[in-house]
Length: 133
Ligand SMILES: [Zn+2]
Image (cartoon, rainbow, N blue to C red; front, side):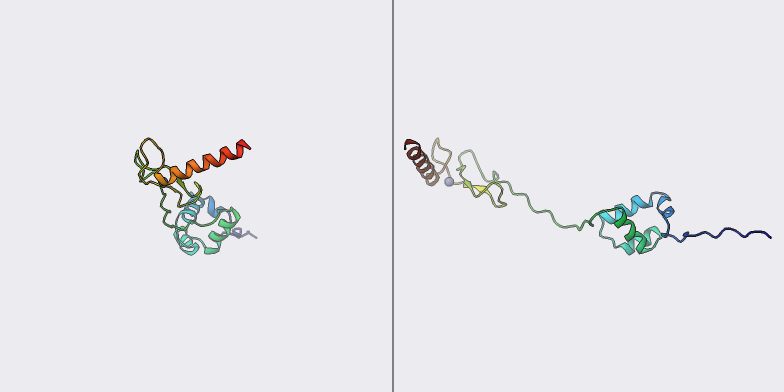
């Protein structure tokens, strides 16, 4: 009696880990998963495996969250509107997204406009009063 050919187990595309070793399917799938908005089903169709194989691989290998393309927030430059004679009084906290400098015309030979020069002088007086105590 002659044995027939050994039954191949787990040879279904996507069922075994061998599938991912052919070519660079894993790298392709990962690239598609992480850097495009293609669904697992679309990626599976491109690579010739099942959707579950792609999903399983993504979770097992911890490919992470899929990147959804979204417009980058516009980076604001607080110095954009300043000239050499603009008031440098900071408005808000530097960590705030709308942080900026006053930008009003500064007094001659002063870093601040008249309003902020007054505030700066008042601050200095308060500090002196505290220190004189
Ligand atoms: Zn100012």
